[in-house]
Each structure stands twice: as C-alpha cells, then as structure tokens.
Image (cartoon, rainbow over all chains, first blue to last red; front, side, top):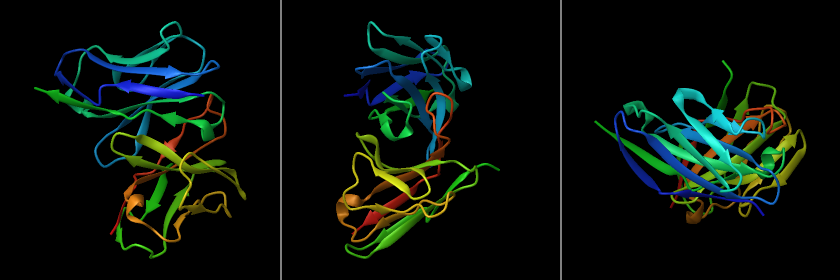
Amino acid sequence: AQSVTQLGSHVSVSEGALVLLRCNYSSSVPPYLFWYVQYPNQGLQLLLKYTSAATLVKGINGFEAEFKKSETSFHLTKPSAHMSDAAEYFCAVSESDSWGKLQFGAGTQVVVTP
Amino acid sequence: EAQVTQNPRYLITVTGKKLTVTCSQNMNHEYMSWYRQDPGLGLRQIYYSMNVEVTDKGDVPEGYKVSRKEKRNFPLILESPSPNQTSLYFCASSLIAVSTDTQYFGPGTRLTVL
C-alpha cells in the first residue's frame, strides 16, 4: 500500500535562504510523485511531478525535487526563498496512472521571514 | 479561461439539513473528484468520477453522495450533514492519465455544520 509522510508541519525560513521540504513515500511499485502548493484561500496548484523520467524534476517558481529511490524520498528545494513562497505545500503519491489513487501528505506550512 | 468553479464558497448549516455543493469545469475533462482538507490530515479523496455515469468511492466516502450526469458537472451531496463534516472541500478535474496530465483544483468550499 502506498503512503506519504511529510516531515515537519511548519517550516520557517529567512528570505533568501534555502527552502527544503521533506517528503518520504512508501510504494510497492515505482510511483508517480507530486508537489502541490496552496496559497491562502486558494485551491492547490501543481509545482512539479515525477513520472519516472529524469530523477531531478524542475517545477515552477524556481522549485525542484529529486527522486531518490534508495531513500524513498522526494524532497522539494528552492535555493533562495522569496516572501511570495509563504504557503502550504503538499507532497502526493500515486502507485497507478489513475487520479483516483492519488494520496496526499499532511502538508507543510512555510513561513518566510524578512 | 480554463477553470474549476465551486459554489457556494462558504456555507454554514445545521445538522441534518441536506445540502449540495456544485462543481463545474470548462475543460472537457473526463476525470473529476472531491477532496476534503482537514488540519494535519492533508487532502483526502471522497469520491471520484472517470466519466459520465461512472463514479467510485475514495478514502472517506461515508456521509456523501455524488452524481455525474453531465461531463462538466460533479455535485457533492450531503444528505444529512453532521458536525464531523465541517471541513474545507475541493473539487478537481483533469484528463485521465496521471503520467501526462495535470489536475486542476477549484477554489474550495468552507463548510461549517453546527
């Protein structure tokens, strides 16, 4: 059975500093992996997804994530945080090519301080 | 503009009073789904639909009903709402395949059941 764990429900980062959000998954087959962002009072927006092509996936707004099979991880990074990155971030996993099997992590709230 | 719309955006109701939350998409997507978002739990799928007249249970279907009579609409029905259904609800739509397509989310409906 698939599952996804996000380490840290809240992360505080200084403007200009590295953003690192951790996501670990369990899956019995090669998974599809996603990062979504949710800005206040809005729906979710896809940042990036891994579909078994390149292990380093580049997304929107300068974010990227690396798929590491040996560590069952898909951590999200951004070299330099901007105030506009303040939002909640969700990691998600699917073992099949069906949206009906998508499973989300609990989310990580990112606060950016000046 | 391509979008997923939900109505109402905010709703306060009382226990046992039937309600419907509407969802509509203008992208001719086959797949539509409903999620609920609760603090610390992330998003959990309630029901999904792969096409007209085809619906299936997600992870938390108890207390909810759906129908898919038209491709663009996917209403969520709470026949007898209870306080534990107080939550933030999101509708989403996409083409079928996780590997090649993107899921689009509505802006959310905040429901309070007293």
